[in-house]
Length: 144
Length: 145
Image 1 (cartoon, each protein chain N blue to C red):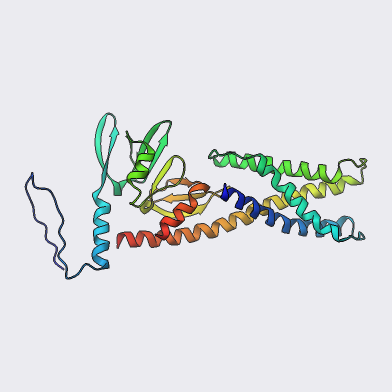
Image 2: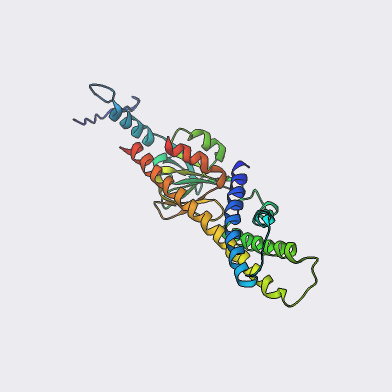
């Protein structure tokens, strides 16, 4: 449980950082003239929370196979995109002007989702390298 | 250092004796190594019973209420349950790495990341076994001694 919590918190903070970058790029592309107040600092945090909701819902104690994990990740990504689009555009009248922004948001979600997983994998790679070093020391101390 | 091997007759118990000036780290390591090779467990294959040296064991896996012992190229069934092996091998070079697997850490060549916070153990015979997220802290601790 503690590990799961740590994993979600880590995923949240990586997401928030990447959302900031995505907001900067999308803002420059679609609304460069837009001015914001201080409330804008809240949005990456809100989007970050929305981003971790699917990993709280789609959770299992079972040990999944690699293909099951990949399917779960794809489902999570789709769910995050749907939740964010609903949060941003629900209740507003539909217009064709919003389609490019919605596509931009969806693409950003996919890119951020992939990047979060790549960063987490790189952190795991570092852990694995340290564990392998410790393993070699352990084996040497047991044999010599 | 001289190495002497003396043949004895049954029913005398087999023994290993070390003659040294003082019991230092090297002697302790030698004792540890001998102990590592000492143990063996029972395994069954095609209704025949075998004694398997612990040092030959790669990993132990529980599948559908059955326990299997995996060697480099061979597999035996055991009547013991996985939790029994966990207790039996707790002070050896074995570690529980998932709900269904105990691995011999002397047979791991490398640890690599897998998806979802899990890790993959590459074994000397080319096989791969998964370390579950839950067991990673215990393994780290065991490796650090």
